[in-house]
Image (cartoon, rainbow, N blue to C red):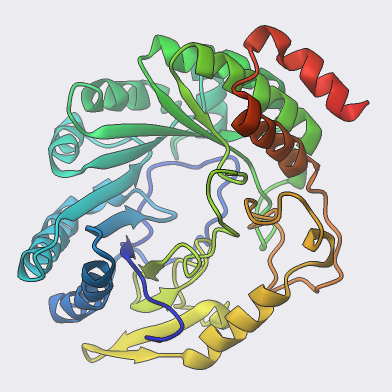
Length: 372
């Protein structure tokens, strides 16, 4: 693996506990509840990442993520952070600690989190009526009050906060109003992602917003955000960065599943049922690490081939190429897909790199020129 993949970050999926029953959840309901990774194995994995960080002169990064609520595993996180700090100290590295959360945990845990992480991403879809419909509790009640309180607590600390909002067809016209709402809550950074269909078809694809509608609504919200000191982001297009899909390998991120495997797709958070084995690049057994280099080699061969429609696209070096809906590991080279949202957003962002931000009052006029 050393020559093919040199990760600078470790992402840990801790298990399957979650208090929510999200409208668009892409997780497998049979995922394992608890992780099975020993301290000894974890330390070995962290040293692999730390050596790369040392060579690249960057901090050792550890992230807790996945189709779960990581903060429900507080005791495990405390233990893992302790081991990560020991490895970082031994390698003379700074440790960067990040976590995602739905916010539906006790105030005590949120208080602990704000003091023990450098960055927290909070899943929050917007005003109460939107969030409660999209992300209800398992008993059907709304979760917005808990999320509001979590944001309030985190904002009182030095911990950086990003809100991640998922956009459905019902909310795609209202991204600007959602940004107004977040501004009122004191939020300064929001990442918008259109909902994407799960490979297992666990939710209705009609939830997915029309690409052009999402692009136009997002860009209007972004223009208002720039004028009002808010950072509004769509991670699928980033002209200031040379990037590709969200694959963990391409992000220099080693993701370890709760059952002791290394995954290179964020949709694949465990292998307990031996599905999606082509997305596995190794595993831990008896505290030893075993790599699956044939999968790594196959991945890079396929990813290099790309998709036909991307070959001559002006946006090809700055676009996630409809990942995860379209995956080169699962779809053929000749498959065509709708990337109109990426092209519209890429067009505007590239224009702004040369000419500066488009004023909010002029964004409608500019967008109409694009489609005419």
